Length: 136
Image (cartoon, rainbow, N blue to C red; front, side, top):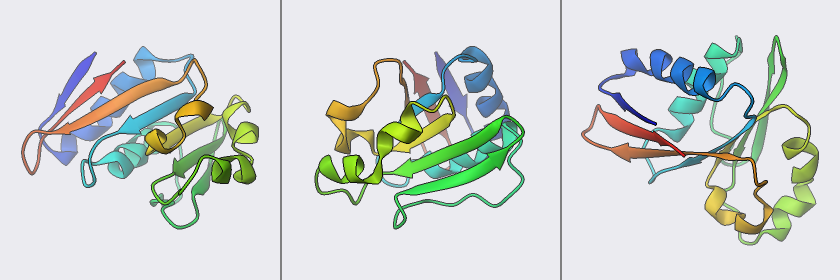
């Protein structure tokens, strides 16, 4: 599935499409270059899932937890990991296998730890304000 987003106002509709097309999926791997909008998309997804608190990039904390009507949502940013063992030390299994939503930025840093049922979401920059989101 491909979704074209021409501006930030279209992002909530894109988030709804992603979630409705993948109602049974809980782990989403967000791929894209720095500045592509991974954290912005996670914010839109969390909003659609009923998160009312502020969301932000967990670049330094590695994982942020948000409350939603359907339970906790976990947002990971593995950009700063030097090796996969750091994710093991974090206890990633407890999150990934909890049946909670997990939004993972920079999954390339933990290729051997990704669950087989994770859904890949790639974001391509088309212009300063538009993106192409590809779900695999």
